[in-house]
Image (cartoon, rainbow over all chains, first blue to last red; front, side, top):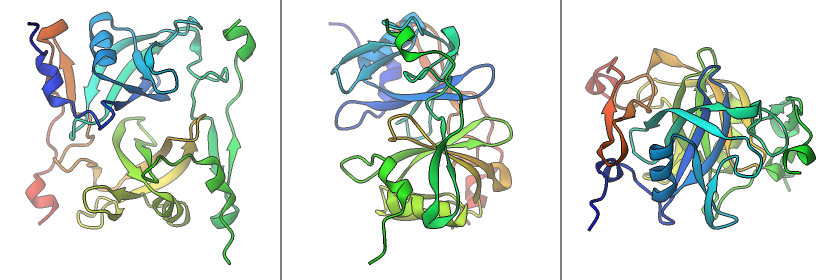
Length: 134
Length: 134
C-alpha cells in the first residue's frame, strides 16, 4: 500500500476535499488567479512543477494551460498558518492567466464611495480570448 | 427600504454567504493572509477602508486588529473574473498579519521532492504572539 506523503497531513482540505490556491507571479508579485485544488491536484503540482487545479465546474483535474497553452511553471509552494490555503509562485507562460485574455483575473477595481461604489474594469485585454481557445 | 448597493450584484457569495479575501501588502506585493468575508464584512470594509472579515470559528464580524492593533488599512479592492474572490491591497499596521507573529501567514514552504516533500518554516517570528494579544 502506498504511504500518504507527509506534506498531506498539514493541508486542511474542506468538506469537498478542496483548498483554494493562489497563483502569484514569482517576479512581479501580481496575483494572477485563485482556483481550487484537491489532494491529487496538489500532488501532481508538486511532482510536475506545473500548476494543476481541480475544476469545480467540470469536476476533473484541470492542468492549467492544457487547452490554451497558458501553463504556469511553479517555483515556490507555500502553505498558510491554518493549512487551508496554498500559494504558488509561478511564471505565467504567454503572459495571460485569465480566460478573458488579461494578465490577471483581478481586473475589476472598486471605485466610488459607499452605496454608489461600483466595480470598474481597469486592466487591458492583452489577447483576444477567441485566439486563446481557438 | 434600503436599496442593495450595486457592487453587491457582481459578488458571488458561496452557499455559506462567504467569499475568500486575500490581503496583499500594497507596497511589497507580499501576500499576507486569506480570510473570509460575508456581505456585511465587505460592506464595512468598503465604507471604513479597514479590513473586516467574517470569523468562521467565532461566527461574527472580525475587524482585523480589534484585539491586536494589527489593523489593515485598505487602499484598493479588486474582484476576480468569476466574482468569487476579493483582493485587498493593504498597509499592515505594526507589520505582522499572522497570529504567530510573522509578517505573512504563508511562512511554510514545500521543500524536497515527491513523497518526501515537507513543509518547512522559512519566515521569522517578528513579534512574540503573547505580546500581541496580551
